[in-house]
Image (cartoon, rainbow, N blue to C red):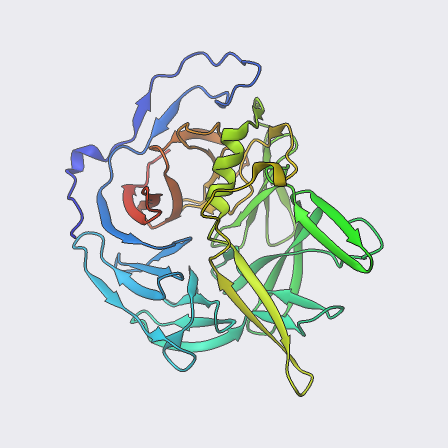
Length: 398
C-alpha cells in the first residue's frame, strides 16, 4: 500500500487557541501560553508493522526500520512506499534474531541492536553488515559485574549510553536511582555521566529468595542523548530539564508548573496495555563447561483476559512526564512526553539548549514520536489490532 501524498500547504504548524490555564484539582494541561500541532503528515506508511521503537533517517531520506517481532530489517522510502529488505533471520553473517533499535553511528553508518544474537551490528549505508559488538560487558551471572548495553542513545562519536543500576544487596533495600553511563565501543571505556531517579520498587523476601517489582507510574526521570554527546534529563520531582555536557558542565532550566494527574483505573489500564507484549526478557544459562551465556528476547507476557489492576501497587498521582527515552531533534531541542489522563491527546513539551521550555505540541490521539530527521518528525500509532503505522511531519521552526 502506497502512502498518501499531502500538499505542501499543509506543512505549517497549526496554533491551537489556548484558554487561560486555571489549575483544576486534578488538571493535566501544562501551564503554557499556547499549544501547537504538527499540522498534517507529509507522508504515511500504511502497511502494518508488529513493533517499532526507533528508526533512523538515512542521508538519502530513506528510513532504516527494525521490527523485532516480525523479524524484519529494511529500508523504507516514505514517499514511494518502497521497501528494501536487509539480511535474514539467523546467527551468521548478514543475519539477525530480533533486530531491535537502530541508531546513527557516524560516517553514514548505522548501529543495529540484534537482541536474539546478543550483539550490536554496524551497518553500512547500503545495508551490508560490518563490525559487531557484544550486548554484554562482563560475565553474566549472579554476583558477577555485568553491564547490559541496550542503548537509550548513541552520540556522533559512536558512544553508547545506557542506564546502570547499582549492585543490589539482598539483605538491604533497593536504591531509587541509577547511573547514566557512556560506553566507548572502540575501547570499552565506561564513564558515568549523571544519576537519574528510577521507578520505585517493591521487594518481597521468602527464605533466601528475593523478588523485586517496579511500581508502575511511580516518579522517575526521563533522559536522552543529542548527537553532540549532551545528555538531557527531565527531573520528575519539580519537572525541570538539565543538559549534561561532555565536559561535565550542567545547564538547567526553570521548573515547569504542572498539576498532578490522578491515577484511576483508566490510567492503570492504559499504562499496562502500553507495556504489554513489548518488554525484554533476559535469560542466563550455564553450559557444561561452566561458562554462562545470555539470551534476550522482546515480546510476550501479554494476557488475553486483560491485566489484573489489583496485582500492582499504584501511587495516587502520575509524575509530570513519562520515564521513557527523550528524543532530541536535528535542531538540538528535547521533546519530553507528558503524562496525560487516559483518552486525552498526547502532549510533548519542547526544551531548548538552555533547559527552558519553548512550546508544547499536541499530537493526534494515540500518536507517539519515534525520532527525527534533518527536517522531519516521525510518528507512530497503533490500530485496534496493535499493528503499527508510520507518519512523517515537517520539523517545525521554533
